Image 1 (tube, one colour):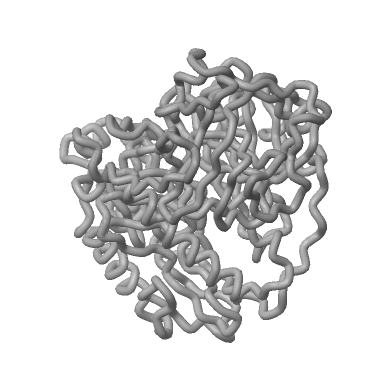
Image 2 (cartoon, one colour):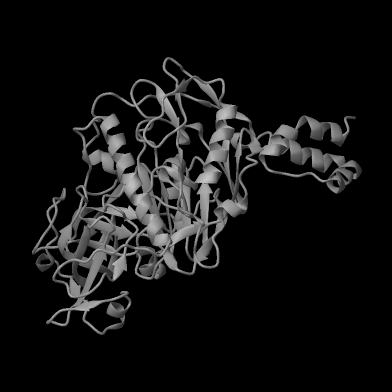
Length: 501
C-alpha cells in the first residue's frame, strides 16, 4: 500500500494553493490513520480551479461596433432567476442594468475608456473619504453644510435597477451603490436638474409622499440637517468633484417588482448638478444608518446580494436580491471589519494572494491591515471597476503573474494597466490562477476576471492596479460571476462562485 507521505508528495501542488501547511505532527497522525487522511487529500482534486496552477482563458476581444442591447422594461420578469434567487423565502430579486446599456451609440472601446475615467475619479474619492478628508463641496443658497457625504465620486454609478417611486409607482432608474448611504432622487419642481432617462418624479402626483419635519428624530439622523421656513428637514449630498444634490428630506413608498416598502427616508432633490448619466437618483447600500439595508432591516433582515455578469461574454442579466433568499447556500463568508472613523464601507480582512498555486511572497496581511485609527484596510465595492491594491502589494502580485505568464506575448501598456498581452489569433490560452485569501474564505477568480480585453485587436491586460492610497478596493470586474452576499445582521460578506447561473 502506498504510504501517506508518498501521496502527500504527489499532491503537494494541490495543497500549496490552499495555503495548507502539513506539519510533521499531522503527517504522524496520517500514518496512524491513513485512509481518512488520504480521502481528505483526494477530495482536494475535485475542487475548483482555485487549487490548480493554471486555468484556461478563452480570449474574446472587445467588439468593434456599438452595442445593440434590448430595450429595458419597467418591471422585471420572474423567468431569469435561479432557484437560489427566487422569492421562495422572504425577499425579492431585481434585474441590474450596466451604465453602458444607456449609451448604445458608443463603441465598446469608447465605453471602456469612459469606464476607466469614472473609475479613477471614484477611487480617488473613496480614498479621500477613508483618509478622513472628504473635500466637501457646498451648494449655494442652502444655508447648511453637507449632511451626508457619499462615496460616489461622479454620481454616475456602474449598475442601475428599476424602482417604482410613490403611489401609484412611477418607475425610474436608480444607481445601486455600496459606497453610499443616502437614498435620493430628482424631484419636481426643479431649480436645477440634470437630464435623466425617465420623467422627473413629481411628489404632487404621489399619495404616499410625506415631508420630514425639523427637530424630529428622523431628521436628526442626518449628520448636519438643514431646515427651511416651513420647518421641513433639508438634506444635501455633496461629491468631491463638485457634483451635488440638495432638497427636502422626505419619506416615500418604493416598489420593487411586487413588493412595496413604505416610509423609506430619502432625499427629494430640487437642485442637482453633476454627471449622473441618465439615472433619477441613487439607492445607497452602505452600512450607515440611513442606507436602504439599514432602513429596511425588519423587511429584508439586513441582507442583500448581487451577481454581476460580464456583459461582453454573457447574455444572462445581472441581478440583486434583498432578504433571506439573498444568502447563497454555497457562499464562503469572511467577517466584516469596522472602521471607527467611517461606517459606510464594507471592510474585510485580506490575508494574502496566491498566483499559480503559490502564495505571493511579497504580500502579507500587514499590507491590508485596517489600523485602530481607520487607516488602510480593504473594502468590497460594486461601483469601482478595477481592483486597487496598495502599491507594494500590487507590484508583488504583478511580478508573480508576469513570471507565471512568461509564455504569453507581451503587448504595450494601456491606460492604468502596465501588464498586457497580445492574444490575437488565440482560441485558448493557459494563465496562472489567482486566488484572494480572505479570513475564512479563499476566492478563486475566473481567468476572465483578471485578464480582460481592452480593445478589439486582441490586447488583454492584467486587471489590477496599484494605488498610493492606504485603502485597497476589490472592484466589480473581480466580482463578476460571483454571488456577493452582504449579511449586515451577521456582520459578514460571502462569495458564491458561479452564483449567476
